Each structure stands twice: as C-alpha cells, then as structure tokens.
Amino acid sequence: MTISENDLARVAELARIRLDPATVTEVTRRIGNILGMIDRMQAVDTSAVTPMAHPLDTVQRLRPDEVTEPNRRDDFLAIAPVSEAGLYLVPRVID
Image 1 (spheres, rainbow, N blue to C red):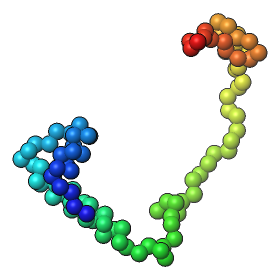
Image 2 (image 1 turned 45 degrees about the vertical axis):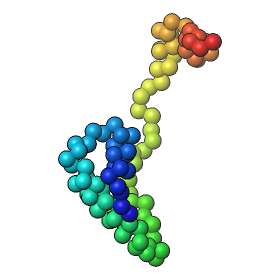
Image 3 (image 1 turned 90 degrees about the horizontal axis):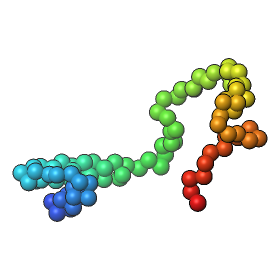
Image 4 (image 1 turned 120 degrees about the horizontal axis):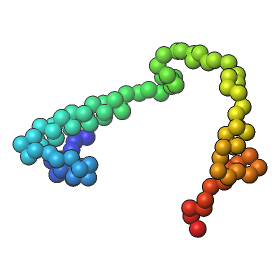
C-alpha cells in the first residue's frame, strides 16, 4: 500500500499536525514503508496458529476476597446533610 503526499497532507490536517514542507517527502516515504510492512504481515498465513490471549503463560495471583474494612455506612449517612432509606439525597440538577 502506498500513500501520496496529498493523502498525507489531508491526514495531517485532520490530526491537526503541522508538517514542514521540506519533510513531507521523507515522511511520505517512511509511512509508505510502514504500510508496506503491514501488507507483508497481512499476507502471512496464520491459519494454523492458535490465538493467544497473552504471550506469556502466566497465572495471575489473586488475594482472597475478604472484607478488611468495617462497615461504616451508618456513620457516613449520619453526617450527610440529607439522607433517606440508606441513600444520600441531593438537589435536583436536571429538570
């Protein structure tokens, strides 16, 4: 796949990137090389390759799911300006 200097200028404009006119040709060549590499990678037959979820076969160590903090809900509701049925009441902001 190739990219023209006009296409590069349009993409740069959309991305709000200022390109120095002296470097447009070099940037176009480099992006063309990257797109060519992607084309070559797309052409590789990977039908016999098993997909991986992660490149390393690791198991995540998990801690036990235990409550470590006391339930202070009532303490916090007691200092709220207005609460009802275990919920904080706030002023309506959208009509």
